[in-house]
Structures are given as C-alpha cells and as structure tokens.
Image: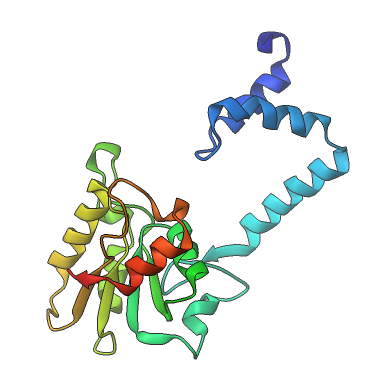
Length: 199
C-alpha cells in the first residue's frame, strides 16, 4: 500500500521519528493531516517553524525561553534563588511547576547519564550546574527520575560538588521506582516535594 504512495510513505517515516508518538497512532496522525484543511496544516507547519526560530535555552537553567536570554523563572524576583531543583528535562520542570508548591529555581540537565546510548556528562549540562553553585545557593534538590539512569545522574553530580556544607536533598519515596514525573498526578508530586530527604 505505502509503496504505491511515496509521499505518504515519506510522511509516515518522518512521524515515526517523533519519540512520543506511539507507532499505532502514526497512521492516524498521517490520515488526520491529509484530511485536514490545507490552511490548518499550513498553520501547524508555520507554528513549528516559528517556535523553532524564536525559542531557545535559558542561559542559566536551560529551560525554554523566548525573546530574552533568561527564562521567566530565573528572572522572577519572587523566586527563592537559594534553592535549585535539578530535573532531567523540561517535562519534569512543568510537572513540578503545575503542583504550585515549589518556589525556587531549576536546572534542566537535558537527560540522564546512559553510557549504552552514548549519553555521558559532556552531553548534559552538569558543568553549567556546578558553576551555578556559588555561595548564594543553600540547597540542591535532585528531582531526577527514580530510574537507574536518574539515580546514577544524581550520584554523579553529588560526587562533583565540592561545597558539602550545602544541603542536598532527594524527592521522597512517594515517587514510584521506574516511573517518570511527567505522567504522575499532582498529589504524588506534591507529597514527594514536601517529604524530600537528604541525599
């Protein structure tokens, strides 16, 4: 079937490269795009191109920002700049922010250590994080996912911290092992943040 429709085959191949799109939904999405009004598809394509052009990483925490060098969280005068919460990706940052119980700053690592996939310390923003730990930072919260990779990443960062007088804590055990923050409910994340333990 697809061999007779090379353009559709190409579209499906590109959709299959999207990491969060389940393979069983690829054909549904392709069909939806083909059946949609051409203006709707054009607006979607333009929105993607515009976002890629306008949005970039915050120079401090590596969160997404637009039109300025630093994100709104880093620039906010209402945030507690003595506390930094370390997360793997932007998804976890949003999950914690949606709970509304954390008022400090963040640091987005860009993933977790995974040597089998070629992700080492140099592929993450660990050096930038260590450089942020000046005398003003009093607590570092490790909110990496409770997976072997997340735990290894937190342990590696802890080993690189020279200022051991700074408080380092870990999310409480309310976070199930093997799960990711992005898909947890607000109550679970809130309890984990409130009951964080020393690292």
